[in-house]
Image (cartoon, rainbow, N blue to C red; front, side, top):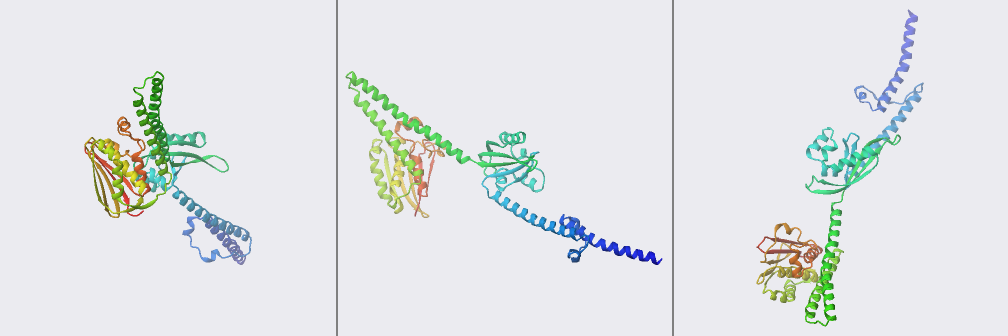
Length: 429
């Protein structure tokens, strides 16, 4: 009996001697693995004290070392994730990652703003899967993603997508790239970047249209000059002089039109290339009288009455450019209103701004033309515009002059009700 008791007691001591280190090892292993079950176990501070020397001390120290490394790595990964999210959110481009089964895995704030509806956002926030086809209906977008899935190489496309922010159709340069495992190089996801090129695309289109329109505008008077000079040359060779003066007058008018066109193009180019204003005090009375005097012959030929009303003091601006803007607006009205018409030039001051209005009682302009009226070479009636001698750049020049002053220009009109152009200058520039 005594031997049994002693053997039992010895066994208990040996079991306790090995059980405590084993328990510590198990707890450390669970802590290293970040097991949730560890929260359900009552653990005292003694459980995390330094181990006593023994058979398991090396293993225990190894667990501690692994745990410290893992903790450091988790902190590092958390920082990298936060930095990546901050970087993605700060991008002006929309970014999205898609799994191989076309489910959205990650996206930045721009992507959400541009392409995700409220319902899709709620679906994602509730951890419900959202497919690429639920976000995009455009075949070009889906084709680009599926091409990368099939071929395994990056794909680019220019796509037009409705922007959820303003409901407008915008043009994007889409780049879809494969994401691969570092070791196996197996494809595991797709990464896509949507770069908004709407403004670039629009600017390029404007440039193309400008070159086409400028070439056409230059070709018209040059063709006229060439034709009449050739005819005049033939007449002079046979001694025919009766139409010589008429032909020379036509050539002279065509040359004048070319000069006006080139001058307007140079003016527009100067304004667009960060023209520096030469500011001084501008007196509305003085510059208005100067413009009316310059255009008096043109107005008298059509028996047009010009009324002036000035209720504004001097303001700081580029007097040469203000005169040019006013002259373009008044001459434009003179050219297009009927004989015996009336033009009003009104200056006023309110809320720290100088307001210039040029109002005529001409035929007016239809609503569909108003938004494009200040575009270069835009004409409502191309035939009539060339007949009255316009270059098609006058209103574009007015717009750029106002923008360079930090102001704006607007137009309001209805067919048969005349036109009203309003220029607003800041009181101090």
